[in-house]
Length: 380
Image (cartoon, rainbow, N blue to C red):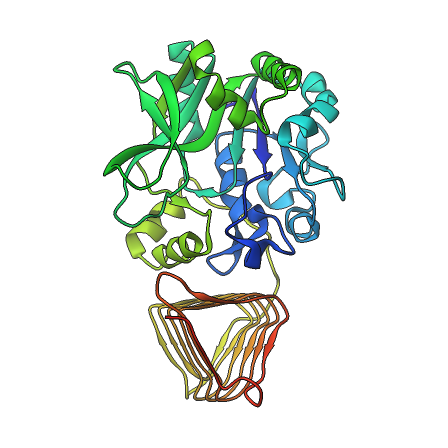
C-alpha cells in the first residue's frame, strides 16, 4: 500500500473538442457508462493503491463535479487526517493553469506528511495498479516516472495525445504529438510519479521560466534536463479528448472483456451512489446489448446503447448505438441512432435524429427537439 504517497488529479485539461459536453462541466465530470464520471477512474486508481490524501485541481464551472465528489465518502476520503481537497479557481481567467493552482495552494503540499506524489489527469480511462508503477519508480531512482501505452493508430483514438520517444533503457529522450502518421506509438497517459520535493522544484522552476502552461508541459519540455523514465501499461486505455473518442470509449464498455477489466473485483471503480428504484421494463420493450441504469422506464427498443439514470423511453421509440444522459425523455415513435443526449433533453414524438457512427450527433443539456419545428436531423 502506498501510505507515503499523496495523489493530485488535475482537471485543467484541454476540452476544446468536447465543448458540447463540457460547456457546463469539466472533462472529469462527464458521465461514463451510465452511472460513473470520468474522474471516478482516477480517484479509484489512487485509493485502490492505498492513497488517503488526494487533491483535485478543478477548473471553472465545477458545480457538477463538486456535487458528484462531495466529501469523497464513496472513495473513503472523508477523513480527519488527509482525505480529499478540492482547489477551485472559481471565475478567475481560464488561463490559470494547474501550476498556478498548486503554487496558490502550496500549503497543501508543505503540510502533508507524504513524501511522494502521483500526479494524474482524468481523460485517460483505465484501471491501473499504481503499486506496481511505484515499485518500478523507486527501483529505477528516476526523478519522474511517466506511464505510457503502446498503441496503434488504426482507430484514431489517441490523436493529438503526447507521444514518448524512449531509448533502450526506457528513458524518455523526447516528447512529440500523435498526428496519426506512425503505425505504433508510445502514448503518454499523463500519469507521473515523483517526490514531493521534486514537484515543488518543478512548480517553482515553471513559474520562474514562465514558458509552461501546466505541470505536464514543464515535464515534457525538460526531459533532456531530468531523469525521466517510462513505465509501460499493457491494459485497456480509453482516451477522451474529442466527441468521437468519447463515443468510442463509451461503446467499448459494452464489450464484456473490456468491461470486466475496467470494473475489476480486485480494484473496484467507486462512484457516488444514487438511491433510486430499479428500472422498470414494460412488456412492449426490446433491449439488446445495452447498459441501463436504475430508475428508468423502458417501453421502446434499445440496442447497443448506454442509458443513464431516470431516463424515459416511451412505446415505439427506438434508441440504437446511442448514449443517453440522465433524466432524458424520448417520446413515442422517436428514432435515435448514433446520438448523444446530454441531461434533461426531451425528444418529441416521431422525431428522428441520426448521426454518424464515428461522429455522433450531440444534443446539449436541457434542449428540446420539437417535431413540429424539426422533422428530421441527420449528420452523415
